[in-house]
Length: 218
Image (tube, rainbow, N blue to C red; front, side):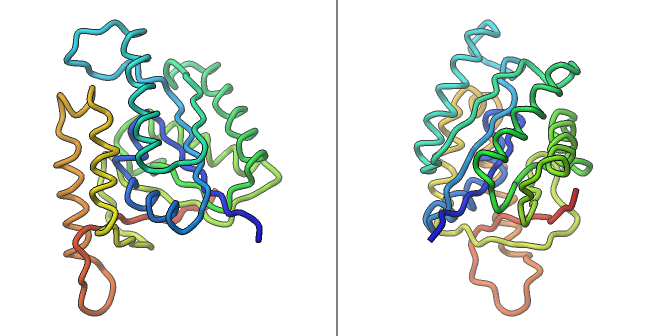
């Protein structure tokens, strides 16, 4: 039986963990091979440590490698781009992404929403991703958007991550430089708890925590 692959696009080193760490853990448990593609190097991140940009890049890379180990992700692709404001970086990202899609031929791609997410870097990355998908011969069967900075007004898929929540929290906590100044763990636990309690599925819910996704087409 051929291996199944899923590609997760993270504009910043911790977006996968915050937005869909529980679902990634579920996919890994089911035998899906996860490719985590991290676009920027995190040098523009807020830091309470007083580090230089280069020192912060090194720290954030070590943090994402630790979180990948916690989640059991098979492949980590670090593009190490400084930002997504410069055109040359956008071109480089599109090229590297196309090569990654061709190499792994993922059945699914996950990314922040190109319009709803309020972070400008997230929107740029996701818009370029959709362009790249249309220009790459091997198309994924599904493209899903995950929540990071902006809750979705609706969704087409909900994943019960009650059993994976402790793994997700540990993966987020691996990004110590970021949770030191903003409690991402507590914030996303609140959102995931809300999604479980107020889910839109029929019948009685027994979920404790859940992640939701919007399907999108290029």
